[in-house]
Image (cartoon, rainbow, N blue to C red; front, side):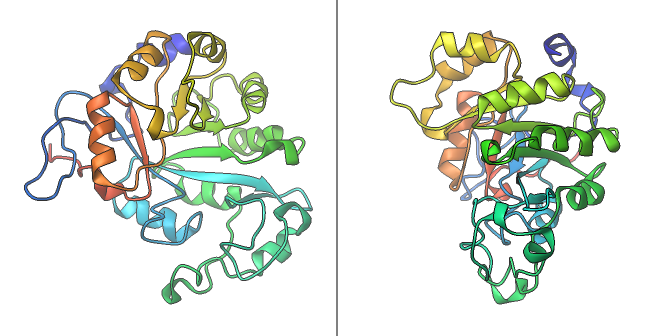
Length: 282
């Protein structure tokens, strides 16, 4: 896997159009622009700065804004269906209450997942992973986060089956990355589908990320994705030394985007895809 990833040239990554960082900016906008190094523009829970997170509206908006990928969160309903929602309860982003794992797909689908964000989004529903994959495969990249997988035994297998059924488990399909804060889950997923790139998510730690950690991660992961507050050029270089890449999270201002580009990050996970420059014309 690692050899395959490192061997690919920038031009070979045909399924994604990459952004490139640099210290320059469009006049009066502070938007990072193309220089020397390529970077993925990853819309966090879709373009969640402009539409309700983890809905089809947010994913469609990210495509409209020409993000390279969108990120989404996957959990499991009471009846074992893979659903796209961030919190382990529905309270914050729908008009319902209760834990995702205690509600059936039918119950989850009956909830309004859009009006909390704005009246124009009333009626948006919680998507299933299969709906999202069917709608957007071939159109954009998808970064799948397994959210709280310890609550959902077997979720790794179910996600693997959804990808395999759509031929998204093949190495030439560089449209899919799977990540989680639960690193044991990512080891399990890597064993199931070793050709699908895996990322480990890391929250802020004052101790930083040790070489011992990076050495462990490289056995199964292709990406180390820490909180943006942990990232500087030195960390990016160390991650690259272990033959991995990094997509820090979550950018909500242009200054942070520019800082991460200058630090050499390989991708930016952001609520606002327009905070990274649009692709220059060819």
